[in-house]
Image (cartoon, rainbow, N blue to C red):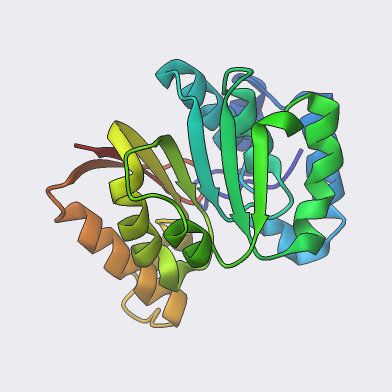
Length: 219
């Protein structure tokens, strides 16, 4: 299906893990394959086991309104939207019409396009345009790493009590604990992880799913 995003898993264990969960159906698998045609940049797509987790989580929490920051080719949006009720809505924030256009036909095929509101604009602008009132039950952040903190702060007042934020790439292939890794993205993720761990407005469990996924509950 795809190479594991987790630096902790072999390809064989990853294949087993996906096969023994809820593996991608034909539509999701086709979107994965279409994304892989983009080449190396396709690594930005969430892992299939992560997508299944997000579908189950949205469904289990009874989420009606969700938001994602960073849509790429739309696999994560497909997975989240599938977990929403028929009258649910996922607000997708991305800056690329080119990449998001890959996913649109698959949203249609899966019958979830009516649940997805895609806004092509800087996510910070889209977030600031929204009322600062509790609205979202689920948020997913998977975009530019230096902006994670600002996205988190903009989302907090817009999350319902007990709402959940999922933050991707928080282990950054293990670089978060490598003292020699001092690039901008790694430093931003470290700083964000430290901030969340010390923030009494939320509680957090960092999960070793794919490249690390923080599960944050808003108090």
